[in-house]
Image (cartoon, rainbow over all chains, first blue to last red; front, side, top):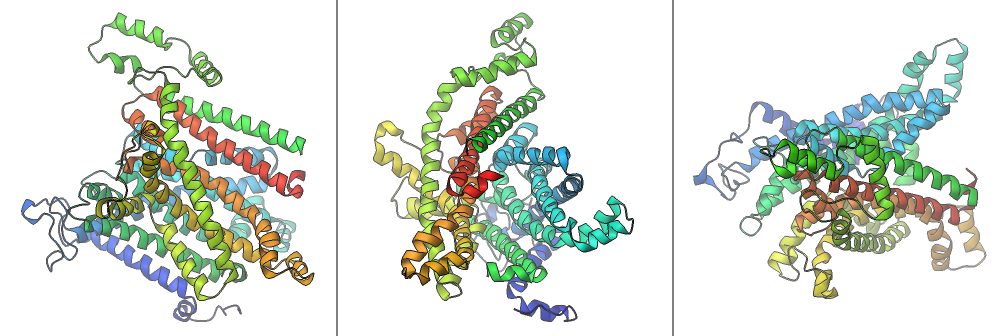
Length: 285
Length: 314
């Protein structure tokens, strides 16, 4: 396929890349739901109402209510906020710590590179979820510890991607030209290497974002993530499990929310990769 | 090959050692005195001191670390604070649930993923490929515990084909035990199979472009023979990498899945031990799980080197 001329308006770009469009639409929808929940939800999520418990879909409660009479739609909206916040900050930790480490490792090489990569391998040896369970359980359950636990495991991922990208870029002509013209190591990294590995980092970012959402859901499901009254999709599934016989839809909606959001993010990641690096498309598509 | 194996093994031993040190230090800096925990807040100071010295808590940290590491060799990992039984026995009891579960899940995901991935690659761009890719996209996005809940609802609650949870133990016979492990294994395996099928497909598509595949066809091999004898075998290298990585995910997955199905495995043990602050159990189980992951990575590396001589030269 021919490369898209950069002058094409953004809308046309989107239409050419259907995965990007679909992923972008889903992610935007979830983002909007999360943002709206900051200022308005149909009902307050800490308003328990025995009279309204386990209602089916109706005009008043489009998705029904749970066993405490809380509105499902409102819970899902707040849950979106929790998921996004946790996953986003966890990705932020990974980028802010991992990328500089990877760049330093690539620039310096030698024992520093070797050492950093060995530490990476060590962290990879710990099954991420096992360690996250340990961290949250030992230092206290809650959204903040969940973020830290997930974030730690994003660090080696971004370090590895940044290092690989930087090593590949380091020997390109324009970097050599910059070095010859007398630019310092830090300026070369910031002005030449970083812009060239930004694509890789963005794509990895969407992947880690979707993994973060799954991890948050898992931690909350076992009771180690967000604590009530804060709503979280994983926690809603935990509460729904005992109600499976009576009200299976309680387990349906939060699960669907997770699956749809993760699919949206994965599509967005695939679309971005195709858009930013058309050479890959032949192999993957 | 021998030199390569030796260096890899040295690196394995080093990683394992650092991992044990890390786990020990993390659990050491935690607040809380195990002796106090066992005797309660009203315990006399001299009783506490006696228990501490009995448990070896009055020795310096490095001595306790060495004793713990030595315990892995002798099989004496100390005594659980809450259950008052040897940790090694506790682990052995639980491992007979977790290990078969992980093995069945790994086998199941491989058996499903490889033919599916090959089929998709052969029909690349067709509707079969599109359908399979869409399904795997969903498989990757499904949290395994939610998938497990759906399976329970359909096969245990509605159809009553299998139990919804619990484990009768291997004493009850292989049949009932396998029945109890069926849904958990499927819940673990299918999301993994989705990833594996995608890797198999793209690896095979890469390989099918290679010259030796064209040569094999040119010398008169049938499509079928070329595919299975040349292409699939070469595509296995990236698949093997992912299989090694997936083992780590599988171990983590069992922790959550065992909780969904109330299976008395290592995952549930570690969970209970963490909530009860039974740290002597926590540290040994974590190290055993991490050790298994490191060992599997090592075996995968060795398998590559055996399969592809070029990799030994690194």
